[in-house]
Every structure is written in structure tokens, then in C-alpha cells.
Image (tube, rainbow, N blue to C red):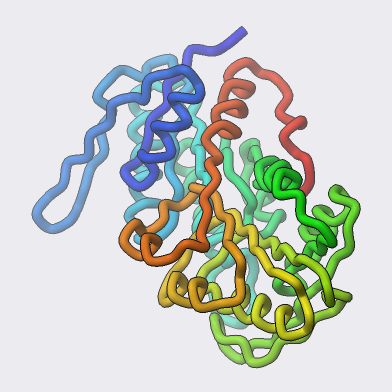
Length: 315
């Protein structure tokens, strides 16, 4: 039996929430955001949520106001007597800060989890966390979805011959291995060394890519430095073509220009983060697939208390 529910959206992800609501056959709930002259804001639900299962869709990419808005919406729903509150976070920001990798730094992902719990979430729904262990930072259920549900059928549709799945760094080995096993193809790994964040000192390829069509898979693309360097290097070493599939299109700095100048045939991303319309218009290499149908189906299953395990194709 389905619970009575409503879907709402934060300001940053309304474009996706509208598609999720449409795929669910529901109307997107009304929310307004009052803004003061100093930049302070206050979200408000413009319809009752008393006794409702409330889904709040908001990715938490920069600026930090997106995270704060989500927290305030959760708090508002809780104070308005919502029965249960589910934070639908297609992109979970601060996920790269999942551990202390040097002295005297914060673990930002854990702090975000604590804030969401303190605000009053009863469940979190997200996709392709940068680190799987972030699920353990929460004391509430976490539905961790995988873009492989969307990417794998797309790879099969492309019908790529002599396919090799590749990881742009050693951290992505598990993901690339899962894809290669599912598709029954070989795997390659790029090994990179950094001196500082976002700057690669050196990179080498482990695996046979000569005469192969390579598909790099990763959870996110930020500056695109790793992806483009890997693509250029693989082409120099005899690859026939190099594509990339990355769930979250952060695309900061000179990423758009870097992608356009690179040897990448195409970069396939999802709409967990909106593309910069002006900058993406300057490249023909970026293709966007929607996660709206996937999230809509999982929302329906959560509402009906059904299993969602069928969506966990691979990690």
C-alpha cells in the first residue's frame, strides 16, 4: 500500500525534480524562498505536508547555499509535522572529504551526514557516492543508487567492438572491474601521481589498449584533467578511440575547453548536476543522460515499501 507523499525541490535541482515528478505521475509541490537584502534566505512550503511522506530533491554542489537550503527545507518539513522526510540528493557534495588524509582537516562528508540527521531526515537517497563507506556515516537508511543502471544499457546500445573498460585512477578500479565483468571485456587502469590537488604529476597505463576502443568510467568529472590526460595518453599508445562516462558533471575551471581540445570522442554524464548552458554550447562532445526515471521508480518503491535491489546492477 502506498503512503501519501509529496515531492518538493530545492532551487538548485528544480530542473531534475520536475522530471522526477513527471515520471512519477505527480505534481511537484510548491515551495517559495524569501530572500533578505543581505543574502540570507528562508524556504517555505506553500502547501500542507502534515502526515505526509515528503521527498525533497536537492543536489548539494557549490555554492554551500544549496546544502543549507536542503537542511532548512528538511527542518521546515519536520516542524510542519511531516510524517517522514527523505532527502533525495542525486549528487552528494563534500563526498571527497570522507577521511583524514592529512593532519588537522575536517571529514566534511561525515559533518554533512550529521547535519542532515540533526535537521530531521528519516532517509537519504543518493547516487554514486565518491566513497561507499559514506553510507555508514548515517544512522538512517541510505539508498545508494548506481549510474551503471543507466550507463550499461547505453554502452550496449553503442555496440562498441574491441571494448576495454578503464579506470582513470586506481581508486576507480573496483568500478571499472565491475563494468568489465558485466560486459565480458578487458580492463585497464591509469596510475597517476599528484603533488597537489587537481594537478597530475605523472600517469601510466596498466593493461592492453592497443587497437581497442576504451571507455573510462568514474563517479565524477571535476576539472577533467585526469580524464583528458588519460584519453590523450591512451590514443598515443594505440587506442582506436576513448570515451568517458562520469556520473556527476562538476566541470569546474577550464573543464569544458579541456574536454573539447582532448582526444575524447565523447563524454557521457548524467543530469545530477546541471550543465553550464553557455559553456556546454561550445562543445559537441558532452552527452547528458537523465536519472529522473531511475529516481522516480525508487521513490515509488520507497512509497510502496517495495524492494529496490533490482536497481543495484553493479557498484
